[in-house]
Structure formats: C-alpha cells, structure tokens
Image 1: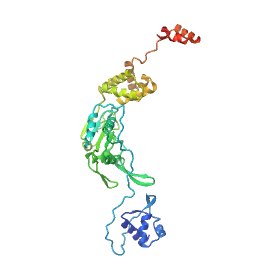
Image 2: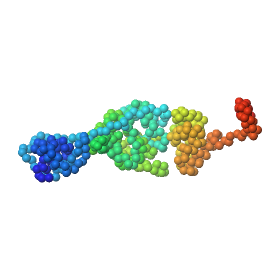
Image 3: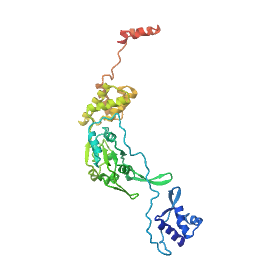
Image 4: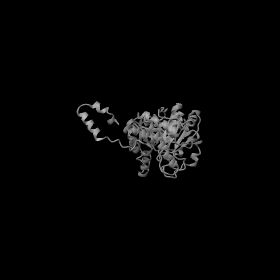
Length: 401
C-alpha cells in the first residue's frame, strides 16, 4: 500500500475515532478523498477482518505510518470511542424465588430475613455441614421478603469472566454480556454466592464488591454502582480455612483480606428433632407417602448417627437432605428398608452396613417374617376357591389370624 493510501486510511481512523471499521464507515471517509466504491474495496481487501457488526465485516486499520496531514489541521475534538459491538445480553438470572411448601423456618432464618429486610449492605457468611439447608434458607428468606436474588455456583474454574461478565458471540456478533454480579448490583438484588470456599484466588475480583463500592468493568470501561438494597450472602461448608479431615476436599483456604470483608459469620447446624420431623413430614406430604411412624424412626436414626459422628465414632453423617431423599425413594418403592438402603449406598461398605444395621434395630417392621399358614388352612382355602366359595374362607377367623 503506497503512502497516499496509508494517509487516507489513517485519516479514516482519526476522523471516526477508532481503528476497527466497517466498509460503510470507510466509504464515508474515502469518498471525500475522491475514491470510488470499487477503489475502496480494492485497497482494503487485504486488511485483516476482526469480526462482524450488524452483518458487516469489521477491518483492523493499523497506523504503522504516521499520517501526513494535507491542508489545514482540523481543530474539532476527536470523537470518543464508541463501542458499537458492546452491549448487554439480558436473561432471567435475576428473579424473586417462589415460596416452597416444604420449607420450615428454623435456626438463623429469622436473622437472615431481618438482614434482607433491612435493605442494608451487610455481607454475610453462612457456614455449616452439607445438606443442612444453608442455601435453601437464603432462597426462602428472599421469597418471603419478595426480594430479587441472583445465585452463583462457585467452582475451581470460576473466574472474573464468569462473575463480572465477558465477551460472547451472539448471532455472529461479538457482544459484552454482563455477569451475575453486575446484574445483581444493578437490580439491587441479593447476591447468593454458593460454595464460596470452592473457588480459587480468582474470586478476589469481588473485593470491591464486598465493600459495597462501585465496580469498574475493565472490559468496557463502564462503572457500575450498586443499587440500594444490594447485598452479598455467601454459603460454605468451611469457614474459609480449608478442610482438616478431608470431608470437603475441594474446599480451599480463602484469602484473609477477602474473608475480613464479611461482617458476620452464621454457623448453621442440623435442626432439632422436632423441627426435622416437620421437614420430613412436609416432604412426605409432597410425595404423597405419609407415614408418621417412619418419620419418627428416620429422625431418631439420623440423630443417633450424628451424635456418634460428633464423638468420632463414625466418619459420615446423615443430613437433613438425605432424609428427604429417603422419603422420596420411599414414595417410589413403598418399602422402608429399601428406601434406606438405596439412599445410604453412596457410603463405603462398612459405614453403609453400620447405618443399615442401626436402622433395622429401631424399626420393628424390618426383617420380621410373615406368620406361617398351616397346611390345613391352605387346603381349606384351595377347596373353597375350587368351589367358588371365596367369601366363606376370606372371612374365616383361622385364615385371617
């Protein structure tokens, strides 16, 4: 490309204030220099294409050669850079969760609800063993308060792009999609960061967010200020110091400066036996498998295992969530022992055997042989069937004993 060509293309860059131009944008400048449409096409066909904008190819114009300005120097200010190919892609991540009929308010629910209703920015860290309702509690508190919330599931792969947003290819066009954190800030919603202790140091991009300050979206230059009501609640199995006994091997040690930005830590335990029975009974109602005796047995069985666990007698524990799984399984197979056995199969052989053995000892309906029927009674029944006198033997006291 000769010097004149370079000057004209550089002029296009200066005039439009950007180096990535569509053919239509180039034509508006080259036409002023007397180029025909065909001349413009011939001169830019070897330029690198870097994407599409509104269906038109975008060309990258590199200003390798300093432009030589011919004629009077323009005094008008250079137009600011316009990010025509940057926009937000909306979705349904921000919503008010529905109330769940199986939820029972207990433990720290009232505290979480009060924090949410205050409208105050008050970062809260909720820790506790798996399956005790931490995430469910926050969700249902938002449902009761009628507050929008956004849930983020943290994993070792979670990074700034997942949290704050990044560029995506949509319908052949490169667009910027705002991440769940930005959406929650703009909506003034509750941001629920689930399993925050599963992340790496990449979640440190949330430092400023945890201070309630505006966030600079580095990829677009936009500054997002949190709307009134925005708050962050995180859940985790550990307190951010890692796991010492190997139960939560994916849990990491969270940076102390990051943890320090949470105002309080709420320690969630398992519910009391009375509360847990209410939860189990609500799930039995949901799955149309009501058996109050079975409910009492399950709750007592789980409580005994937990006490043994806390005394270091066993390495595993039966969570409230697992009791609900047993109820659901019971609704399918209609057998107590089978529901328990299937739902403890995930444990190692020794643990599974000890859990099943303990349950069989507390449930009198397990392993009880059916009463034997004498040969005389069986012969009587067969004879009655042959003679079509079914009603006579079905009502016989000896047969029904």
